[in-house]
Image (cartoon, rainbow, N blue to C red; front, side, top):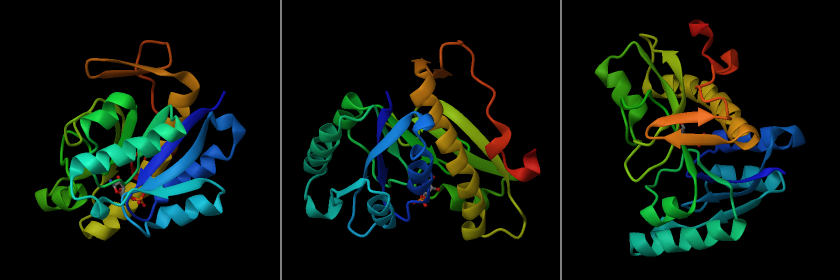
Length: 217
Ligand code: GRF
């Protein structure tokens, strides 16, 4: 049976779009049952509707209190009975109550634990790193601190600005996200401390080279 996935977004939703496209294949193992946003007009909501998937908004701005917003979000999430919640460019910290009830996977545009937070691409560029990338990890109560599921490296070009570097990161991160969500759905996972195991083999699987940045192959 297909795993039920709810995707949370704040913006353009290119990661959500990649998941919607992959999940259209019954062999993928996961169905996107809804796409939700924390603000009206997030681009990915229209993409969901076009794909025939439910779109919902729990606008942060409508709640005076973070606790109330979290409670409203939980109500929506619970209604979809997700096996996985994917935070794909969702720019809000999820409350402990959300994380207690749901398994949340987050995508982050840097090689964690380097450059957590909302400005990862800008921060990596400002630091002058030669290699950055993207991380898919389970969310915990910290900011981008949960156990790493997979990572992909992207070389910084000396001519990069934040936008060009972020675009290159996004092109590999969405392939990684699709790969990881599909495998979590099809193979299952376990977490011991910080170690994430996909499937039952007990070792971290070699990541597919499909989403490795071309220059790193
Ligand atoms: C991604 O780079 C994600 O890692 C970051 O925000 C971006 C979202 O892009 N947190 P999109 O909305 O999926 O296009």
